[in-house]
Every structure is written in C-alpha cells, then in structure tokens.
Length: 121
Image 1: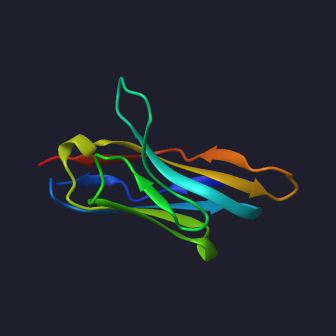
Image 2 (image 1 turned 180 degrees about the vertical axis):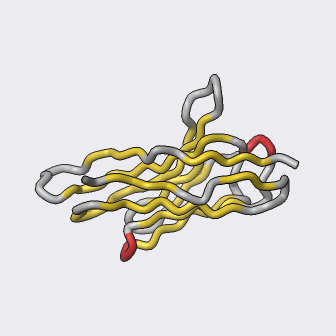
C-alpha cells in the first residue's frame, strides 16, 4: 500500500531547530511534486514549502529564510529543515505528494498522517 509517513515532530524552544522527514513507501514508479503543509485549530491547511521533481522550491513568506525543503529521490523522501523556530510555527505538519503507484496510469495525490510541532519555552 502506497503511503506517506512523517516523523521528527516534537517540542522545541523558540529559536531551535527541527528536521521533518517524510518517506513514501509501497510500490511507487515515480514521485512528482512534494510539499509540506501545516494546520492549527480553527484554521485551514496552509502550504509551507514545496519542491518539484527537478528540485525547484517555493516557500510561504512566513518561513522564507528559516525553513528549507529538500528531497532524496533515491530514498523517496522529502525533508523540511526548520530553523529559528517561533511559537507561531506551532502546528500539525502534513506531508503531501503526487505519486505514481505501480499499476496505475496517473499520478495520485497523497497526504501523510501529520506530525505535531510545538514551539514553546
């Protein structure tokens, strides 16, 4: 079964860093764009960062200069490196990706289960 699995969330002090990996597992022929979103209670899910299959990236203005998205195609994994974390970065972070599963003729959009990031002293 194809799925995206996030890890790396937790509690960190303001100014600290966290790295969130998201691994795609299952029979996958190809992965197109991948991204990270976040959601807080009462708000919609917002795009944090995205990366194309060719490595082109884009970021939300609120995280530019602090967060870096990268991918390891050999490991089917995307990473979100978060530095200089602020309390307002507290959210559930979700991985998203367009995957081409084995036996399927088109890319399918998948979401991970989410990982909690809490920035607090």
